[in-house]
Image (cartoon, rainbow, N blue to C red):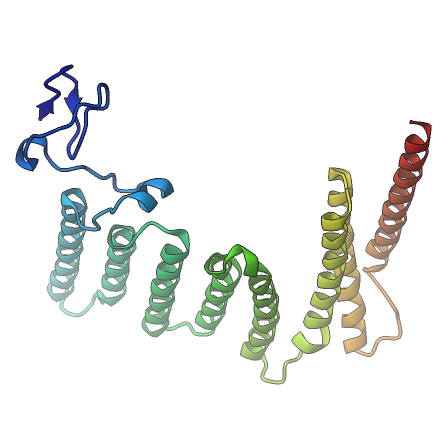
Length: 291
């Protein structure tokens, strides 16, 4: 603990000058102390200062987590031995180990979303694989692993791209969703019964509809009402496309069944959006003429 010799203000560890009077600190490091860093620092602090990954507080928490994890594993092993084989500890041991790893991840790496999310997804995938071999029920791990991969592509990968190349992440996300649908269909049926005939065409219709909406939002001046109606319109087109392509896949003579009502709603919303855009242009034209 040190104080300024001029104004008496208490100095923080690692200070090089008094924060009040800017008097230079000439005390040795043993007297002034070292600068302390919080467990989770702000972005600007992380850019301007070097944060040691293993300071005393962080080391203490890591040691506690490891100690508790080891104690829990030993307790489970002793319990299994005491029950003479009637109790299988492997599922509990795996869960405890991965629980400890989840706590250790933010303590061992910098708290950056993309990096944390990647590590968490990797360990979650490993946990799913371990549970797949420990639990007798089959057929669920593949879906979970595909979902984790889709989340990484859609919600994590965009943060690895710079702002000028974000469009590449959008294209990768669109391709990832399409591949997810195909692989999900391949898990249940190797003949791809519904992905190529129903899911992908419906997905394409939704993407095209959302693309027109985004173009209008970026290069036009839509109101909040226009944006909400455009999203509802895209959803309606998706429902209509799903019903239409499903009927085509079963060779039905009907054009639409339950998708007829969303089709009517979509047509009405499209007319409303077109009229709103035209009326707004006409109003702005006469307003500019009069002024």
